[in-house]
Image (cartoon, rainbow, N blue to C red; front, side, top):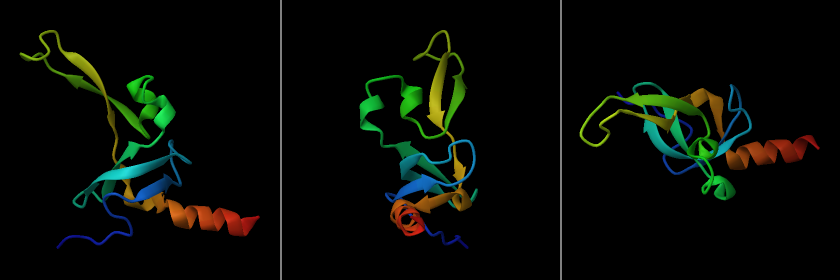
Length: 100
């Protein structure tokens, strides 16, 4: 049976714990089997910069030699984040406004 999460694909969320704490992103994929989500960065100004900077939680991925990459390649991909470590952006903003 599939788990029910407090977030879904397309929601804007904020990472509340871990190495990417405070970063915002939009949910690109929900992995119910791992109880994790994959985010895509929403920082517009860094899209023309390095691919790694626009990622919320980057991880380096090695690609083996193949016809497209005859000498292999290194790619920066988005790492999964556990669903308990993210919070909807609206709720996060409301919580921070009420603390002031």
